[in-house]
Image (cartoon, rainbow, N blue to C red):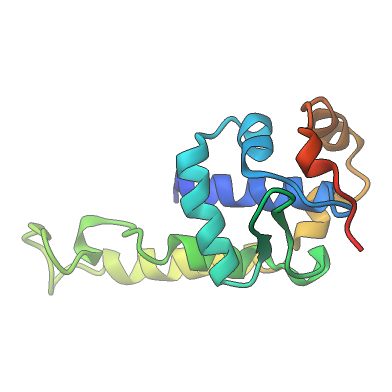
Length: 155
């Protein structure tokens, strides 16, 4: 199974927010640290906010922060939410499926089972696993220059 760029960036956003839990962070800050376009990142941030993974604040001193504790964010649920629309194979598509074997091929069932096993395996891990006691990640994310507006400490 191949993880989409959108899911990959969503995980990076959450990791960045988790490392900087003590303050609001900005989209431009995350974009720089995570090598993502700010426009694409905006769409992902909106989806993460709708799912309750992050909270956003508008305005001059706005930004975003985690909406849940890192230990409560299970990677399996996150990946399911972002990968739900991605077809594992052509035979999973409702439109555009040209496979002549549909109805006789058992591969779709096998792939479905494999996909579920993938998500179930990810469910064993939380965002905490990715960020806690990860000095290398802390160091990478500390190298990003932080704009003054995002330096506001959370209450």
